[in-house]
Length: 114
Image (cartoon, rainbow, N blue to C red; front, side, top):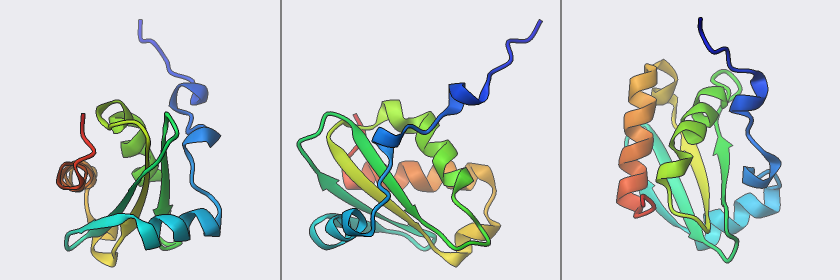
């Protein structure tokens, strides 16, 4: 028998979200960035004990896929960081494996992997 997961098993908690325009701007202006042809990752160290992430994507693409990779990879990231992951148009046509590869490559280059 399969173990079915509920929506709550994949929740993206409020304490892990960067939502306000001001919070995004702080990370953009004072964080450092790593870039590739499909996306940009901005990273800012902070004093909090958790990781916060925000996504900047077009409405056509939405950010559900990006959130999914963060949920699955969060345990591999260092604590006390804020991340903004900005998708470029090329990422819209990418498959899920490409999303994962891009996220992990940028995280490694940003030095935020454990």
